[in-house]
Amino acid sequence: FGLIIVGYFMLRLLGHGAMAMIARLMVAKWFDRKRGLVVATSAVVISFTFASTPRVLYAGIERYGASNVWLCAGVFLCVIMSSASLLFHRDNPKECGLNQDGDPSYEGSEGESAKRFPIHHDFTLTEAIRTWAFWLFTIGMALNGLVATALMFHATDISVKYGVKPELFMGLFIPAAACSIIAGFILGWLGDRAELKWLLCIMMLALSLAGVGLLNLKYDIGKAIYVIGNG
Image 1: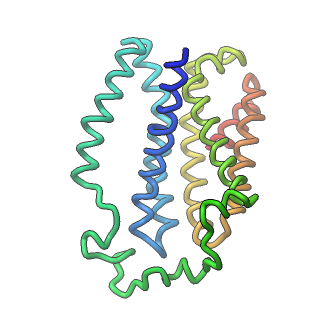
Image 2: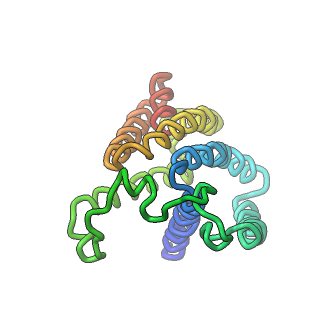
């Protein structure tokens, strides 16, 4: 049991958590003015990937068994994705002699985003953990990740508990991905213009809607609410 706990913790931390964050941040470091649009565009691929993964894994487990699917996923990650990262990943534009947005006149730390959202004080770690803002964002992001992981790993049991066929519940991830694409572009546009606290509020509202929809999953309105909130 202890090994399972450690395994799932590391999977959530390094797999579903850190790798997803790295994939987003490594793109964002290359852009300033166009960052919101670029992140939203990349979210299209990410949304469809996340939406299709439960169905693909479920079909694979049903046919080949959980252990074989787990092994194939590990090989894909360690061999294919690691090789692609080594070949194509560059940490920042300066390593390639470029500027953010591909703009020769880019002004570095005094770029447009820095002017819109000026930094009045750089907090140290000790100072940051004493503020409400730090814990609100940390807990909010943690809740989002925990709920997403729980739904991913327990989708079959959740669907059975609420009287829905597993295949039908897996199918809800597809329309949720469509909602996620629309939301991604809207939030990407807002990300360049609005303060982060409002984006956090929107995320928490969506998470609450997903919970309400999940509790009423046997009803059509519950499925619709879940799709919108999860998307």
